[in-house]
Image (cartoon, rainbow, N blue to C red):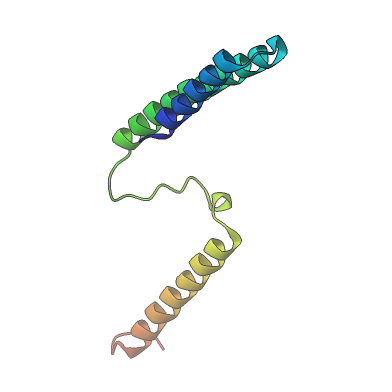
Length: 102
């Protein structure tokens, strides 16, 4: 059962409560809550559709990083550490080559 379907179940329950309620104020309250549950269900359906469309457009297997600021602090630290390690490895490889400048 999807989230939108669960919201509709809640709306149905609120409708049932409004029908069995004797007090007019409570009836109005239950109907209002049912309407809100239906609105939530509709928003969830729209959100699920939009998410599905975005996932179809995304290229599989490719991470999308717009800029460095979008990374967390830990991600920037790891990225910087990886760059330093790669640079050190490249420097060590160059030093081991016989034709490398001294």
